[in-house]
Image (cartoon, rainbow, N blue to C red):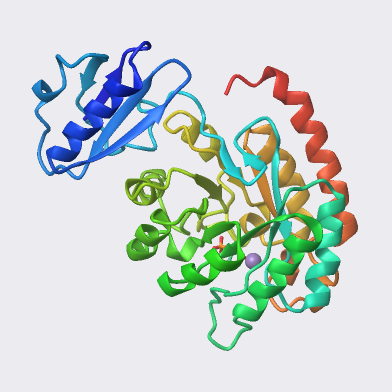
Length: 339
Ligand code: PEP
Ligand code: MN
């Protein structure tokens, strides 16, 4: 159930609704919007009795939730969520660019790439310290040593660090060194991991599973939010289809599809979404044109020697050119975008 407060409801009115929800043994999720606060209720098995709330001061109406979503939905929060990572944002006016290598390979590699990412004006640096590789014999990442290098990148360039936690234990480590926790495509339905990052104070980048429907993806975001972490960014990274000309099929139609349902920001990853360097920039342009809130781009100073995902990495020069192009598109469409 959703308890919608009146525009002039006081903090006391809201607190009262929240404490009644707690007394009933449920969890309250108040979301302040531009015009009103709405409070979603989770933790109930059956229907919640609306008479608990209907006549309370400040309550405008109660709405029974018939959709599978309680928290990601525009019904709860009609305005877009802006995810804040320190002084950087995703989902606001700025185009959120997260760039860096697939994996952290060495201090020199990371700092060389980070210098270019910083120079481009991007606010976020990516790089895996724990890598989910298809083969157990492939490079698995530097582990905690990689995280320490990432922390040095942050200290040197002020970039926000986005890095993947592969499992529940890894979240503790990422919390120690990073600024935003990436949940990878292969973990999109790892429910214990989703619950754990839902209890983190760091924002979460939730990649779409390789075969996930939109509903499954949004319900994965619900898992995180239901634990109280509302700072979630969705990332479209391509899905499995019969297409053989790309590594994955980048589903750009999912951007407006998400917009029609959810207030959460969504970014596009054309690197994993195509798997081919030559296709990354064209699809990045398209991702921005379709209205995404940002991009995740893999960049390497020596793609031919990369320990993972070299065939989809941009060189530093190609990356610079990409940023130049997508910023022009973003500036051109921003004034005409309604959402
Ligand atoms: C990555 O970002 O390097 C990665 C492994 O992504 P995905 O989970 O989308 O495959
Ligand atoms: Mn990768």
